Length: 202
Length: 202
Image 1 (cartoon, each protein chain N blue to C red):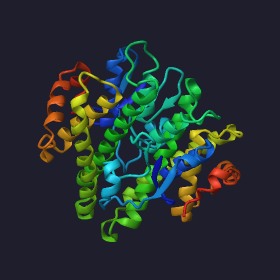
Image 2 (cartoon, chains in turn blue, yellow):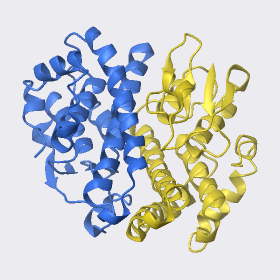
Image 3 (cartoon, rainbow over the protein chains, first blue to last red):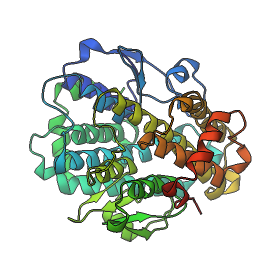
């Protein structure tokens, strides 16, 4: 299988962690792919018309996207511990947590575009403030929940690791650790996990 | 159950269609909710820290979001025809199609924010062009696929109906029907479906 990805993308990182957690690393070739919200990319567009990463080309030549769909698909290809609970309340708690951390990431990526891609004269302070409110609202919920996670590491925790790692990577000056001591401790432990350590953004 | 929604939101419409397709309308109270990317909403934020709609409060008091998670959850609550294929290739084709139409909608909503919410002096033409490229790239794929759908109406078609309906609602001047005759014909037929007709944006 071929995975369009890059080392900076937090959504691609979700897939890259899942590949490593599920023992599929030998079956997935990661193709370093540069994307920009304002530039075309004809190669990627042939497989994903949204021109976003991650996108996965399966062994049968089908393309899958986005990160949620790819992660769920890859989780069907192995017989080990599943990262998507199959059904019931546990499934929806995990899916909601993935949705929460994807939402934090959507907001953070929009902040990144606003502050690093958009011409300086066209930036809008209220937009950044609105997106930051979503991010810190999400972090507050994670801070309240993380104490009950113990060693759990399903798609919800994968998303959490990617969200916190991205904030460190792009917005270190926001100091998300301040006011989130439980999350800080959890992230420190989880960063030692091989799948997380091997995919640190760069 | 309580659904935070409004009649303009295309993502809320996915859920509102699914509720009607699955016979759950009597169990879901739709609460008209105004959201803005730059304004706080304390009531909604208590249930969804991302301050986005749709958000569903279940009968047991849990909150679920976003539209994908809510739709999949509601699809477990009825014994009729399922809108999420349970497994195998059919599931991933439907999930990819939902992801494609969500991606079209993400891009269209960003265009809407750019042209109707952001102060005029701060708007960026290249941003709109980049998002439109994603939208029309996605429409081209749907145009190529729609001929094989027959009467199928799963979560992929729900998403397609919401995406096309939103383009009509906010960007009628883009004339998406031009160059997409198959999709135009399909949408005309699907707009007569009661769940789609009852949730027309307004």
